[in-house]
Length: 315
Image (cartoon, rainbow, N blue to C red):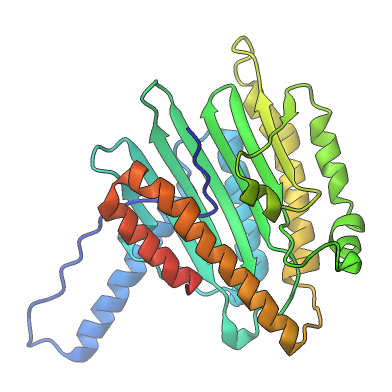
């Protein structure tokens, strides 16, 4: 089952009944509405960070990554503003559940963050077992030309897991050799990939999508971890001992060199970056998510989630 997500998704229907009493003051009504929104948001954030269907090493990795990003960027990020039924959702049969968490950059603070997007999806498979996908993406805005961040883990069985970890470039690496040197050579990102590939259970993973393969960097970690059924828990060992420290190192590089590093970007170049970033967002929604979500969650839920994503992506 080929499902590619670069966004976090969870379905939850929360029923909010506005007060019908007209005798209450506008101040009280506004306060109550604000309190309800805060409660809904808190619930959505909690559900997202539970990562309920994962093993402990996998869950700990995702929680640590999300917490590191939010703690480091702090006031540069706005609170999640997604509706409750977008932060957590499911299909009609209850065979697929998902959570979505987004935080946009705080523009008045001159943040270079466009938005942070985290998600998990759990889908029961007709053949038995389940598909679990977790992802965390960070998109920068045209105030900088630095790379974005992406990690995605796709697990279809206790013995098989696909890892995609990368700082996707936002410029042509052939035309901009300094960009290649700064973000991929000086940071020695390729050494992390080489370390993982030395593990016997780790094999290269090649996406069937030429488009996806064209987006990632030359140092992208795209591997499949395959273990024997006679080795229960081996995938979790690889996550804990190898994937966890490498993912945190790559995230640290992104935070230091990309999210918090300063780059001089002229007006003409900003326009090019904005156009390129926008095309990738459109492609993600229309081709990637648009083809998978209706099949997994039904047209009604899919329309709701994709509509919310378009608002986040400002498409």
